Structure formats: C-alpha cells, structure tokens
Length: 199
Image (tube, rainbow, N blue to C red; front, side, top):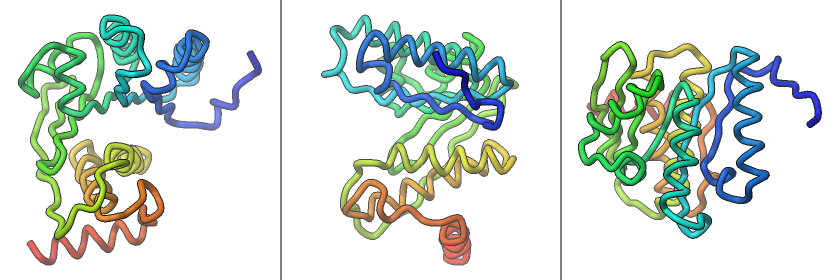
C-alpha cells in the first residue's frame, strides 16, 4: 500500500461500516489501525452496525469486536453495545471493553445523553440536551462523535468532551439533514453557553 501521511494526524476514527463492505475493506481497517498506532495516534471506533451488510451476526460481532479491542476509545450506541457484548447494563458493556484493554468507552443513550467509563475506573452519566422538536435522528451518532472527538483534540476532559458530543447530537436532530446544520466551533460554544444560562 502507499505510504501514509498519518505522521501529521492525531486521531484515526474508524467506522464499522467500512469493515462491513468487503474483505479488502476489513483488511484496510486493520492496516490503518496498525499504522496509526505506530504513529502514536489515538484510534477511535464507532461500530455503526448495519446488519444487512454482514453475512451473519457472528461474523459482525467478531470483526467489530476485534476492531474495538484494538482501539483506545470506542463509541457504541446502547443497542450496539448490547448486541456486541451480549450485556444489558451500560456499566457491564463498558467493563467488557475495558477488560480487553480499551481505555475509554462512551455509550450513546439517545435523548438521555451518554455514559462513559475510563480504564482508571472513572465513570458517569452525562445528561442529554432537551430539544423542542425532533425532526430526524439520522446522523445523531456521527454528530456526537464529531463533537466528542473535537473535545479530545482540544484536550478537554472526557466528561466535557461527552457534553460537547451530546450538544452536537441535540443540534442535528432538529435538522432535516444529517450534516447541513452542524455548527461551527463558535456556534457550538454559543449553544452551550445559552443552555447553561437557561439551566
């Protein structure tokens, strides 16, 4: 494969959709993870389960968990976490991955917000933001990831990064598209400040 420019990057974010597309796509995911780790990058992973892209649930669970176990941070939705771990409680889902060497598990809980737990045992529920009207939930998970990862890139705490992710998810579900109304950094900061003033 061609030489990468990973040396100039800080995070490799992997989607489970890519791994589901073909055998070569799976191989590319693992190759990219290996190269990113060699470059001391953080590897983050969103399972993005799409059952219709997999031959079987067993294959899906195996491949996605192999990627998760090689990642520093994983961002499953609660339903995805239950499928991949066969656990029901968010705390048990988090522990399943932490015991495999994952450093941070953030479980998206939809309108309720998110739960996170780190390898040093710190965990908390982070309340979601209320919205006056939900138009479309498509893209909420990706919006959450973009908010959370922007916080990580800016060296915010895990908690504050999750808050930012929750805010991005709340913003995008009020939009007719899954990315057109994503805020700029300034707009996001103004949204968070407005919410704080109303609290």
